Image 1 (tube, rainbow, N blue to C red):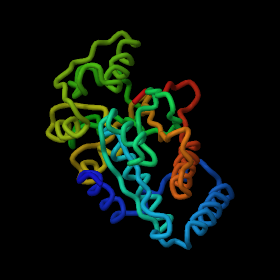
Image 2 (image 1 turned 180 degrees about the vertical axis):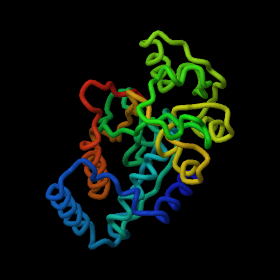
Image 3 (image 1 turned 120 degrees about the vertical axis):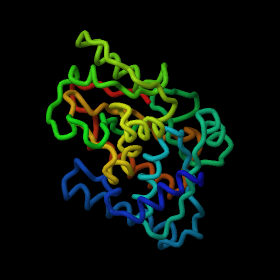
Image 4 (image 1 turned 180 degrees about the horizontal axis):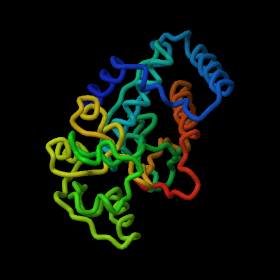
Length: 268
């Protein structure tokens, strides 16, 4: 498991059962049925003994590593006997690991289609954040136009979240002030915390700084955006029982969190 992902996973397991949010959007009966099916499937793996079926191997694109860590943590909490390895890799390496059998599943951008791979959609939300003490921190239903003069901290040119945000401004005829262009979500988060400006962040990336009170999520009209990821597998290869269970639970959990009608999802 890559170091960053290992730290994310340890943090999620230590701090709560708040990571087990995959059942949102389903009623109690559906949740109980799904949990029962999951337990039955896991029992068939060897009564919770990981040695009976080996380690589930999950890969993730760097941008999806925190979403992957949450999914892995939730799976391990539901199935205490499971063992899961999480490896963070670039897009091409992630595909190579699937093709070579090093990983069973991989979280990749939903917009990327590859022959021989089957994609199963999941998503993560992108939310505007501001530094502690910002005048808009406690405002409600903020108009997007109100953010234009504030100074934005954006990802690099060509990044889908950046382009989607700029397109939203263009749709209302506004050109926002751009204060910084950075190459990763981590650096955007740190820049916001340092007071450089307002930025758009995945929920997972903002978690630790939000908990520390360094940044605050803003209630902006028309947001959050949905950044689309998929859990990818080899179409021609039969999954292990543990991989099949992980995939089914992740996809079923995402079904209750689909983008509302009329709001377009954002490609990863």
